[in-house]
Image 1: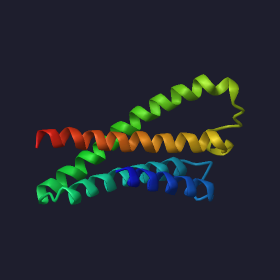
Image 2 (image 1 turned 45 degrees about the vertical axis):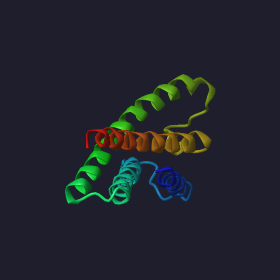
Image 3 (image 1 turned 90 degrees about the horizontal axis):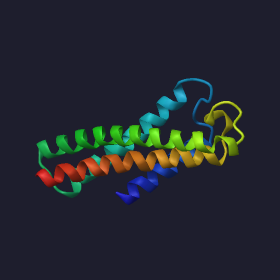
Length: 131
């Protein structure tokens, strides 16, 4: 799980640093969301594969990781937005965080990836206790 998270963080950082996301439209956040949820799905697939689950176990693991990733991303977005509001007087933003770029953007997207993966991992652990 750690390796999936690190690879996903590296991927999202390289995509943003390489200019692979549109900065002025809704396409950038949608692509980031797709990357976050694909990482959560990869965690569900890895858990099902490593635990040698059956067909139902694969389906349950993927669905649980997806919804856990959604919850983790939602909670992470609330926490990171609150921190951004608190740190706003100390930062110079020229528009949105995506258009400003820089270190705050990379910290934000990587922290959001960590929250997403923690949500997926936590949901998988919760379901594994019931199995």
